[in-house]
Amino acid sequence: MRLTNLLALSLVAVAAGGIHCSSTTPAVAPSPDGGDAAVTEPDHDAAPHDASTPSHDSGLKETGSRVDASRDTGSAPDTGPGGNDSGQAGTWWAPGTQPLPWQWELDHEIVTSSTSDMGTGDTTYLGAAAAAPAVYDIDGFDNGATDVSALHALGKKVICYIEVGAAENYRPDYGQFAAADLGSTEQGYPDEKYININSAAVVVIMKARVGMCSTKGFDGIEPDIDDSYTDGTGFTITEAQNVAYLATLSDYAHSLGIAWGLKNGGDGGDPGTFVPDMLPHVDFAVVEEPFFLDTIWFFHPLLYNAGKALFVAEYTNDTSSSSTFCPKAIADHTNAALFDVNLDGMVRAPCH
Image (tube, rainbow, N blue to C red):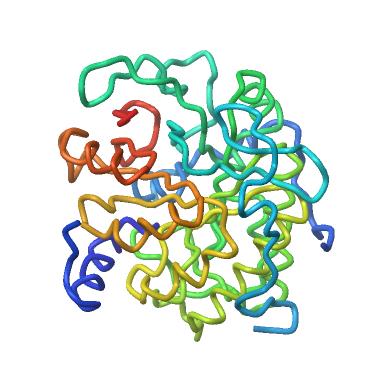
């Protein structure tokens, strides 16, 4: 999410009635061998970039497109702490609602020998030893097939972070975007421009990103800036078009055997409709600061009742201790942790 828009989501909650207290092959497939070593820029959910730090057209599905019911109900066999995954063609990882401690490290290529990168040795808000992360959410470009394989060898599930609503000029596929498909510069991120998600050419590029994640062996995808209809993109994009675009990418990811996530959802727009409309298309959600903003009710119990995992990140710039949200986070069946906004592995205070 655009961190600068987190407050907007809270304001939308007020406007909505008050805060509640409660199968085409990708045209271009980046190499699976290793990460893109030249790319050292932090990702979109890390601290904002600055100039000195390298830091519906006919192709789209309509809202309510088909859902693989067998996967959404978690019918695939349970293979361990990362959730369900049959490993068969036409199936994909379904995290489910059991506790799944997670690590979110987007700043750099993960180092499995680093305790901070791996999020091991942490303590819970009660002072007890925290469980080791079962799920890792890492950058899809910076990390390669060997990184994903190393995490799999440790019994972990791995989520691929990519942006689907913007183009970053430090990514190797940036030159594939036509000038007409590049819109406004994102506030706080001078190296990123919104993209025209109604463009068939953009869909092809984004399918290639999905294909990259699949080729590298990732289990799921965190699609950042997935609700760009709420922003000043420079294009006219409706909520329905946004949902249709994401449904297309979700269907494609599922066809490759990879799970699709929801990233926040509807901030600055109407999460009361966007999140439910996206529910049939997603397998989990990654949400920033829902306890600090008191917007958890947009996501819980909706995802829980659908049997889908909710990964929550609270940030140290707004929340000083995980004890302020962990009791409710655990009661709400979320996988929550306190992170630093840099998402560099240096701060992680999990609830479990």
